[in-house]
Image (tube, rainbow, N blue to C red):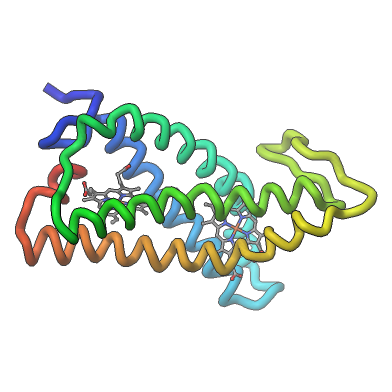
Length: 178
Ligand code: HEM
Ligand code: HEM
């Protein structure tokens, strides 16, 4: 029977749904960021891919908050790996969660303090301010750098799951999430 909650031998349906749907959405988000970085300003593909960056970024922040609550609720039910690799996995997952929150949050805070206002899915969330708040702009300037650090961490995470666990150790860690 498919379980909704996690257990030591397998992540439950809800954790797996969060993980794989968000992995696909993060891939789309990094595609838009890569096009923004690599293509010239007037490029049509860059503009098309950029149309969803802000709304998808906010959606990802909302999803990660829900996922975090669900993860904490299920933490005691999940398998734990001991030893140095277990600590590395915990630190890696904590780093992923921290950056999944910080990267979109600082940009939203920057927009809240900015002069252009901010809308999500066409609904105005923050009105335009007459004068920008300096510190919100300062922290939001870390968005791109921290976004790329998150991308590097994701690549390390995928390598750990597929190369280390699946092909070298040949354990059931990948199967637990598959
Ligand atoms: C988890 C969600 C997000 C990720 C992973 C992400 C990732 C990135 C990355 C890697 C860049 C750098 C692109 C470059 O080098 O040209 C970038 C740029 C940008 N992002 Fe995001 N982003 C996210 C959410 C958001 C949100 C919520 C907003 C708006 C509130 C936003 C607005 C922007 C803007 C305006 C830029 C271009 C200017 C800059 O680099 O600061 N992003 N994003
Ligand atoms: C092809 C892509 C991916 C593969 C093969 C993969 C594989 C896995 C596996 C096997 C686990 C279980 C690890 C364990 O129990 O020790 C896991 C957990 C996790 N993954 Fe991924 N992953 C991928 C993409 C991503 C992406 C894009 C993110 C975030 C941006 C992510 C974030 C996480 C987090 C935070 C966990 C900890 C469990 C949780 O709270 O959901 N993964 N992943």
